Length: 107
Image (tube, rainbow, N blue to C red; front, side, top):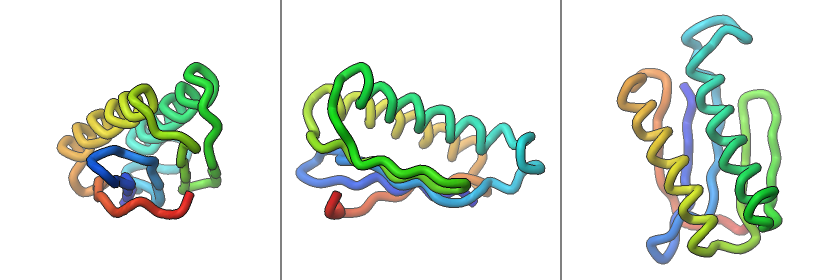
């Protein structure tokens, strides 16, 4: 299962961590994993490359961590868009994706 953890504090999203695999198809053919990865990378790239906010970002097979150094209206809008996208995917694939929330971690 893919677990997406959004860090939240003061009613704002501060970043996310994604871990796991959906196991719905063999590696390289899994459209659920590809959808989650693509959305997360787009959000991260939009924040760092388009908005221009540096971030702590780590990615390996089956995991991604992303925490912008600054949370503002623009970064939160992108993170909220990712949240909406992944929440809707989790409704379609409840056995493969779980979205959870936690307090802000030290980024």
